[in-house]
Amino acid sequence: MECGKLTIMAPLLSLAYSTAGSYTNIFTASIFTALAMPNLANTLPVANKPIPDYTTSEAGNPFVDGWYADPDTEIYDGLYWVFPTSSYSYDEQTYLDAFSSPDLVHWTKHPNILTTADVSWATRAVWAPAPIFRNGKYYLYFGANDIQEGENIVGGIGVAVSDKPEGPYVDAIGVPLIGEYHNGAQPIDQDVFIDDDGQAYIYYGGHSRANVAKLNDDMVSIGTFDDGTQFKEITPKDYVEGSQMIKRNGKYYFMWSEGSWTGPDYSVSYAMSDSPLGPFTRVAKILQQDSAVAKGSGHHGVIHIPDSDIWYMVYHRRPLSEADGNHRVLAYDRMYFNGDGTIQPVQMLVRDNFADGHMYGWTVYDGRWAVADERLTVAPTAEAKAMLDTDFADLVFEATVSISYGLGDAGLVFRARHLSTSSDGYKGYYAAITRAGRVVLEKVHGEKRTTLGEAGCVVTLETEYAIRVTAIGHHIDVYVDDFVYPMISVKDKSFSHGATGVGARVTASKFGHVSVQRP
Image (tube, rainbow, N blue to C red; front, side, top):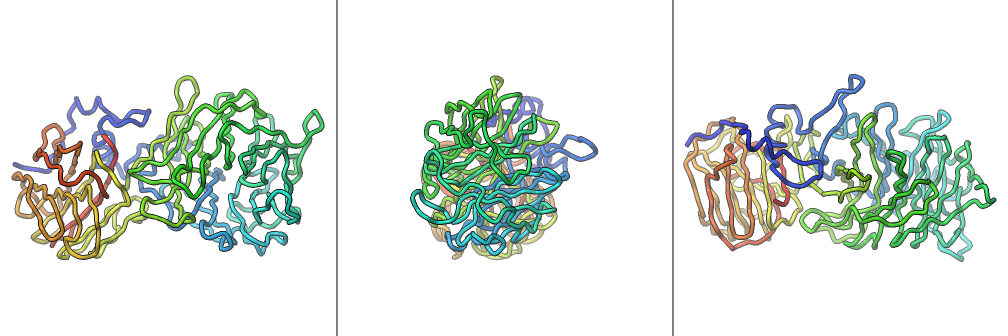
């Protein structure tokens, strides 16, 4: 059988990926599109600049390298900005970095935009920055010192200012902006929001209590409400921390994090109101851990693409195999609204088209791996694997695969366990194309490999083949280019779940447009 002739079939085109984020036909909506375009996502021209229109971070989550958490966002001069916490042990959080991007794919790191040395009263950690622009200045609000109620310690929410979004930022007032508990709310985890009428608000709170206050026009002092108070409690049910405010179609969305930040139950919920002051009645949880993708997901910011109804939730999460509570990474996924204005649950998708030139989030088990020309490449070796920290049971797994030279094979690894750097040391499944002109599905159990199915397939060097594996329960199908009829269809119950990745044996190979999710 000849492989390599990609044919888009009308029945598949009718099953494109829905705005609800549910799986219909990933390959039609992603791989075919990707092969025809420089990257996997569609773009819409606005003011001669493409607008990102992605379903997730198509170049992979995490989208930047390193341990970071508590991201907040802004758009400055046509660039998308993310301001996170440096996610290490508390006393190591002495600085803040920022990241900017023209397209949500290629990110530039701006290190040390604010450090404890820049804030005379910040004797310990700085974290959870919140950016905003006003009066020709860039403001950055932050928490410092982690003060506790009843303690006579200086700390709380500070404000720094700069002439440039990348800083350097300097302490604007020399003391905390909010340095005491009000209504039982710890002064941390602030978000700053400027309403359409020009009034600025600061939303904040820890220890399961939330407040809102007005900011004066100078952005460095607290205003007063009509009733003479300065802090109004707005705590919704199950609030813990991580305040965030957005506005859409005249509705105010107050969002927050629930659960323990070190635990797998960390999550994001929201409330809606007709007023920036509430009342805020909890509507639903919209982001939580996915046992196949990541845990501890929460404390987010939101990017709204101007002149569109495209929204992204930017958040932190903890890799599945990571045990250190401080070790968190930055991710973003699409946020969709229903017709009545409510928010759909955010789905963590696993994609990587390598358009950013990196392989963040991948772990190498043998082999020399690199990213070149938007492909993950590997030099020939006896056994090479590059794996994602996932744990899928039922799945739809797709990628493009090509062999540059060599006499072996290259393909997709799934439901893999006990990964190690020793050749053939893992347990799992491997679906591959071979230089001998075959498509094979193997069961790997340590050093023992068992062929579960194979089919003839002409394999040409430097030709990219799109491979899909669907595994639902004991049933496994392997497709190559034609996604109507599987080339291999078997039943096997040896392995029920595990990691996903790519591998090669005795070939130089290239992989692209990786996509993994539940059916």
